[in-house]
Image (cartoon, rainbow, N blue to C red; front, side, top):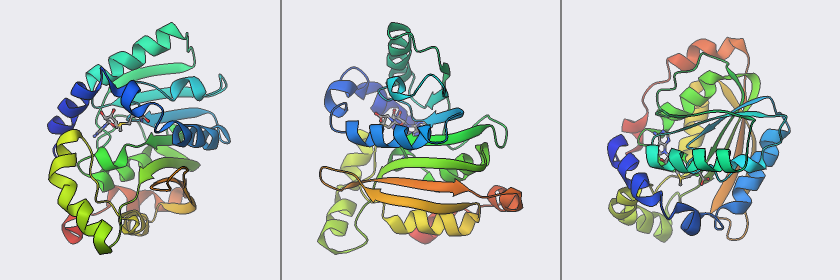
Length: 227
Ligand SMILES: C[S@@+](CC[C@H](N)C(=O)[O-])C[C@H]1O[C@@H](n2cnc3c(N)ncnc32)[C@H](O)[C@@H]1O
């Protein structure tokens, strides 16, 4: 998967995205925003897409949204204007792998159905850990692929097709675990299967304190070990 390939795939999805993916991911989006609201404050929503989750935030939270796809963000901007969502601070085209924000700028980082669409997920996860303050949270909804067995084989086999559509099917929990361990910057708080089918999960990491700071910037590229 390549960044430009993913951006153009979502450029093509933008006109029909809400119709196709609106209802199917609704419960996961609600669960993620509900968890984010427990902390509140300044929220970074990565891969905000067409902004389907934005109306779910209370006006006490300030939301900054980023996405790699301009056409998806245009839809989000229309929604913000139409619904007068004044707590949305900004919506910008930006790559999750290279965030322009200072360390510890946010109380929460939310990424819903995004990690498996990012070409280098571990790099993005380390960016999330960098920009969230110590004591803040990283809240993800993500599809978890099978570790092995028939489903695992099928998911690997489907990768050439789904990567053209904008996401990967093969992404086992082990990758999150290894990233968390190697970064040394986060602690797993929760991992909960989402209804109706349990293929998607709500995952919450707490950002650890100052001591972990140096480890984050030195997070090695572990992709080569995972191929
Ligand atoms: C499946 S959609 C999810 C959109 C939204 N979060 C939702 O719940 O409907 C994945 C989104 O991630 C964005 N995305 C993919 N790779 C990205 C990257 N490297 N940086 C920022 N956004 C990215 C896509 O453009 C797309 O809008």
